[in-house]
Image 1 (cartoon, rainbow, N blue to C red):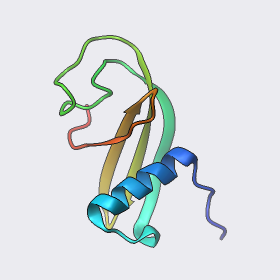
Image 2: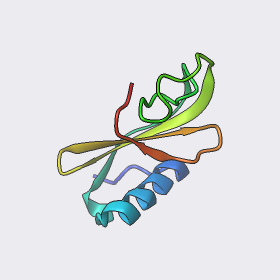
Image 3: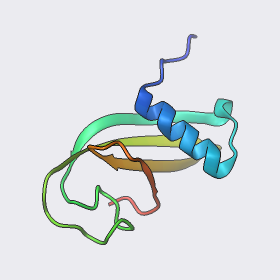
Image 4: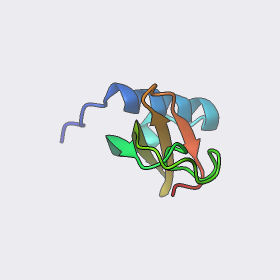
Amino acid sequence: MPSQPVSGNAQTVISLHQAQFATPAEQINVLIDEALTWPASNLGCSDNGGIGRAVLTPGFRVVLEVAGVRYAYHAGRDAQFFLCNTPD
């Protein structure tokens, strides 16, 4: 079965993950790759400034899975992704 094409955002997140965890690309699965509107300024992540201001914030989410462990990367409109340890 041919593999699905990977978006630019997913490729960015895969590169970030590889740099932080030294994970080979073939062990990384992209589960979620989406544009969305976050309900608050914390971009859906409690460890990114608490609960955040209730303001609709456009952004992105990419969720990876490596060896059964999920890693959620969030970003605002600027597509500056960060690992969210505590997704809301």
